[in-house]
Image 1: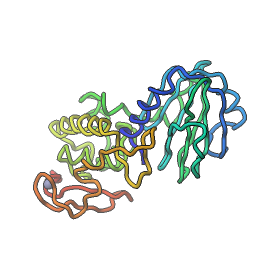
Image 2: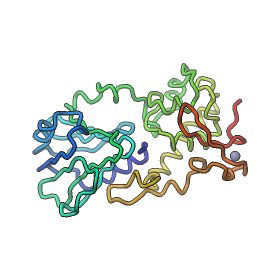
Image 3: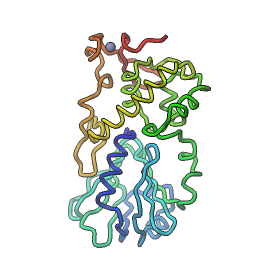
Image 4: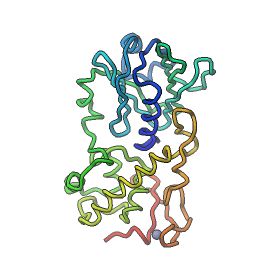
Length: 275
Ligand SMILES: [Zn+2]
C-alpha cells in the first residue's frame, strides 16, 4: 500500500505537471470510486484551476479555485499516472482527467478498489474524520510532540505507529524499517519508550522517510508506480522488510518475520530487544 514516501513522490511528480492547469473534462468509468455524486463531481471540477497539490498523511489534496479540494486516497493499489490522451486505457482505470491546453491526461487506476476520490469545500477539509484524526507529520514532528503522542498509549509501538493518530503516513513497510533503524522492538508498549528511544525514533522517522522519498518510494509487485509509470527503488534498500531469514546488516542474525496484529512484521531479534 502506498505510504508517505510513495504519496509524496506522486505529489511532487503531479505538481510539476499540473500546477496551474484548468480541468476541461472528467470521465468517470467507475462511479463507486467517488465519495461524491458523479455528475456533480464532474461538473464542479470543470473550469477549476489546480492551485496547489498538498499532502496530509497518505492523502493527496488538490487545492482548486472556487473553494474546492479534490482529496485522493490511493488505498492499497491506487495509481495516478500521466498519459497522452491517445494511449489506450489500461484495465481498472476508473477516472480520467483532462486539462485545457494540456497534452497529458491524469488517470486514476485501482485494481483492488480500496482507494477513493472525494470533492469537498476547502474550508471543510480539516474537519473530515479521516483528516481530523491524523497525528502530526513524521518529517516535522518535534521530540515533545512525539513524546506527548505516545505517553498515554499502552499499545504495542508498531500498531500505535500504524494507527495514523500518533504520527501519520506510516504503513507496514516503513514502520518496520523505522523501528529497526531506531533499535526498538515492534511489541514494546508505546508509553514505555525511554527518552533515548524516543530520540532515536524521531531521528529514524526523518532518516528513513527522507531516503525513501529520494529513492521515489518502494515498489513491490508494481502495485505502486510513479506518475510516469516507473517503479520506485527504495525496496532495494530495505533493511528488514521482505528479508525474512536473511542476515541482519548490523549483526548477521537472521531477520524474523511473524504476524503482529494481523500484519506481517519483520525485525532483528538481536538488534531490537524488549527492555
Ligand atoms: Zn541485527
